[in-house]
Image (cartoon, rainbow, N blue to C red; front, side, top):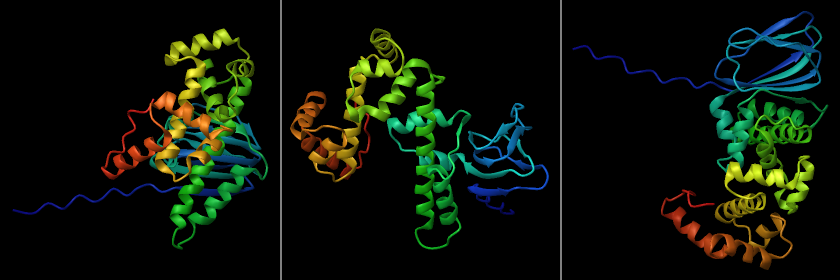
Length: 291
């Protein structure tokens, strides 16, 4: 009996970086399906069309574009345009985002098309340059460094896009999602609920009703939940002293932070850390019991 050939391993898609340097005529760049596309349009004009993507109007730079999936479309680039295009496999995007509630909100944001102003020589552009340098190296640690660069790029894009959504009320998820985005950015400032309502241009009562319906908690309760989640993660995964955790979360008095933590967790930060360390040693890395 003839032995069958063993299946060949599937070759994993790799991140690709393309620099477009003022072509003399219009050129087209294929956007592979299964990969996210980050386009830094430094200057000039592009148009997205073809594949499974709808026809788009022409976009002028400087502009930052994010497409969660190229879907086999094409980016048509006008002559004289300068741009940097990152084609990022979906798995790399997922691995670059934190496995936390914040990471889940980021994933929801990056699941949609995004567009934002591109600052000349801004942080995103500088980080992309750093990623490009590290990605081309063969030195030890270069791959890990590139992964960190990608994580930082996504964090900065998310901050910029979410801030713009909150400021202009364009969040597709509505009032509650805008509140959640703003809360994740400013929870360490310990603002009053009325401050959030003012920033979102709604009354405190309307904000309270919307948040209760969506989360089952009051806005204040939701803010406390965010602080406890962040505190729990820092206590579990870092060696920061409890006082440093308190200061990092905006508590000016570590003793007050300890009382706050006990009130919500039922145990002191030190005891929680010991318990988390034991669970980690026993292989239990589940945080399902977190609020």
